[in-house]
Image (cartoon, rainbow, N blue to C red; front, side, top):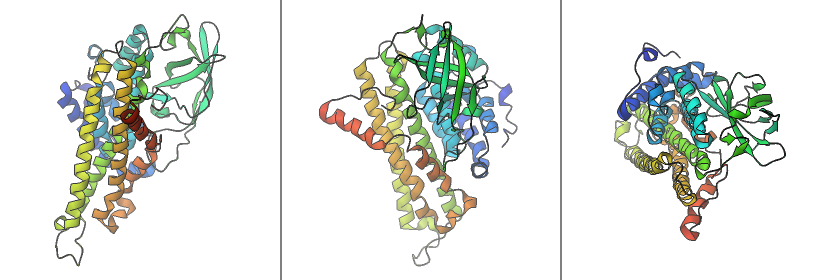
Length: 404
């Protein structure tokens, strides 16, 4: 793909939420042009990530004084949703980028946050992350002024298209987890290009080997004199990224519904025994689009509401309590469960309205279901519903884990 005649790299960034959403819509429209072909080719999305950079979307959460958008998470989620309408893989990459960009604020010292955000925003740098809790911990060795990471992770979303990679491991002989941000081309970081799944094919989510990657203790996020002082806000990474999931699921579902709608209007034939000349007059087709649209609107509204509720936490990170964090996670769990359900239903069900001919490979309508089906297996949605049930019946809030 090409970024065409946008001149974004030379223009000023958008101002205000409406401007940023319009920019996201422009990016989405460009991605939609050849989304089917790019999904089929499965090539490394260098051009797509360049589009995210050139458009300025990568700087949305960056400080305005450094050329960033200075925007907040509710808008970031909506931008992810808009991009995901056209390409779920690129929506996921952008959402993960936002989370890893924010990781400095979650666990870093004020000095570390200032350096990371200035450098990343001014350079429009793109983040990836090698943090997969289902694998064995990466082992960190203390060598005086430096620490050394060694290990392997099954997934490293962003890998070869990223400028910076977030590493995480456990200090040898302790239970101390340490995050650090390193250049993706640093010696010892090897991306294996082995992501070969049915969906989200362009996310560069293959495995990575971490071999003697050395960083200064000063880069250990949140550590001062080799000591980390925990706070509740450190644990906000999970509900934050789960809302990223919610929004690219909803974006993919919206993309499926809009793509199917265009197909139905232009190509679907009315049933020969139904008594209608046009597919858009078929009662069962009208019912299906009405049903799916209503369900999607409802979950989109809930997703926006939950994102707005989190603002009080993100705006006052030093004041958040365990109870406040836990109740937010319950709300996130609820919308994650509903987004999973509605996205799977819509992406699989639109074929009922589009008809048999829409299953042709050239139409690419299957990519929406493949993308949602692949990523919704990230963590069992039943556990999200259980979190909500435990809060309702026993007034229990989830304990912070890698998945709650």
